[in-house]
Image 1: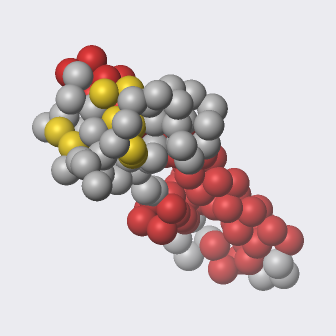
Image 2: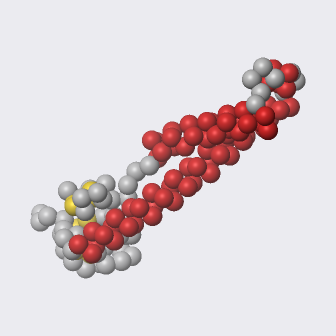
Length: 127
């Protein structure tokens, strides 16, 4: 089989012949040796990565809030909190932020995968 030179931007499949995508049949494939196509692939990767990061941050923030706010109803929580309380509930905000950051990092490691795994966006090359 020939080198899969053509790429579909919709489903990220590669094929050897120019024409319609064999895998998804939604769009025509583009020549991956064209620098403009490589820049377009880089743009698609960047946009998808930004959307994933935003979604992960929102989920992390919601989880941080969902963990701390119910603690406010636990009997004795406010008395226990006095040992390390900061003004303006800054301690609560810091704990929520740390929980959110942890959730964001875990989601990023688990679910952050590129659409084009064979594409090196930093060097604009296809492997």
